[in-house]
Image (tube, rainbow, N blue to C red):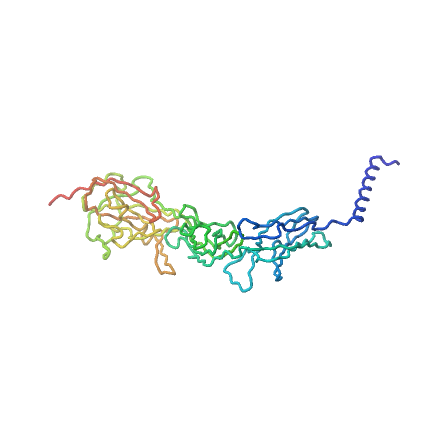
Length: 465
C-alpha cells in the first residue's frame, strides 16, 4: 500500500524541525537568565531639587523568574527594593530614588510606622537575583555599584498626635458629635488623615481645618470630623474604625500613625411638626389668666392643661382680651433613626409676653430640639420655647463621664407639646400673626418646620372699670 504524498511531506518537515531543535540545544546552550542589568546614572542626590534625584534601573530576562533587587552598604547593611516578584521574559525599567521599604536604625525611637524611607548616603553594592520558575534550573545574579549623596534624609515625623474623643456620636445632638485630630508635622509633607473600618473597605478622608499653618507645611494641623452629618449626609455605620494619619515628604518617605475610633448612635436627625389631615396643624385657643401660672427663675408656676375642646381645631381668627393666655398645642414626630435631644422648659409652661426661655434659666443649647412660638411683633425669633415632649414621652440618658442628664425623643416616636403665652401688650400691629416652629438649636430650622400654623391674633383692650 502506497503512502499518500502529502503525509510523506508532513513527516519529512517534522523530522527536520526535530533535528534542528535537538542540534541547537546540543551546539548552543540556553541564553543567560539575566541578559542585562544596571543603574543609569550610577550616582544620585535624592533631595527633591530636580537634579539627579532619580536613577533608572534596567534589566532583561530571557525566561520567567522571581526577581529580588537589594542594596548593601559598606557597613554590610542590606536594603530591599524589590523582593521575590514574578516577572515574565522581557525588558524592564524602574525608577529608583533611594527610597525603600521602611526600616529603623539602631537606637531610634520613632512614633508610628516607618513605611518608606531613604537609605543613608554611601556607596552601595546592588544585586539583582533571579530565581527561574522552571524546576531544576539554577538562579542567576548580577551586581554593580550605586552611589547616593546629599540625600534629604530627615523623616516627615508626626511629633504630636491626639484624637479626642475616640468614641463619638455624630447625630447633631450637641453631645460628642465630632472628633478632633491634632498633630504636629516636622517637615513639609503631603498629609492625609482618614478613617477606615477595622473590617476593611474604602478610606473616608477628613478635610483639614483652614488655620495658620497651610496644608502641607511643617507645623500644627487640625482635623475636625462630624461624620458628614453637618453637610446633610448620613455618617458611616456604627462600629470600630482606625483613624490614620499619613505623612509623605517630597523624597517619598512615609510615616503613618494610627488611633482607634468608634462611632456610636450615628445618624441624621429628622423631626417635624406633624401636619393634620383636617383642621389646624397648630391648635390655638385662649384662656383666662390665673396667677398660679406665673413662673420665674426662682419659682415654677403651675403647668397649664392642654386644650381639649373639639372646636379649638378651627382656623378662625383669634380674638382675645389683653392679659389673657394664647394657648397652643401641636404634635412632634421623630422620623429618623436616631434619638433627638431636647431641653426645657416642659410642655405646659406659661410665659409672660416679656419673658423668654432664658428668663427661666433655659438657655439655647447646641443640638437641642425645641418647639417655639413666634409672633409678628415679638422681640426676637421664637422667644418662647418648650421641650419636644413631657416626662412620659422622653427617655433619660446619664453621661457616665460627666454625670449630666439628657432627655431624648426616641426614633419613630411622637409627642404632644403645648403651652401658653400671656398677651399683655398691644404692639405696633394689631391684629398680628402668631405661629409655631420646630427649632434644632444652633443647627437649623428646616423650611417645613418654620412658620407652621400661622394664625391671626387680635387683641382687645380691657374695658376700664
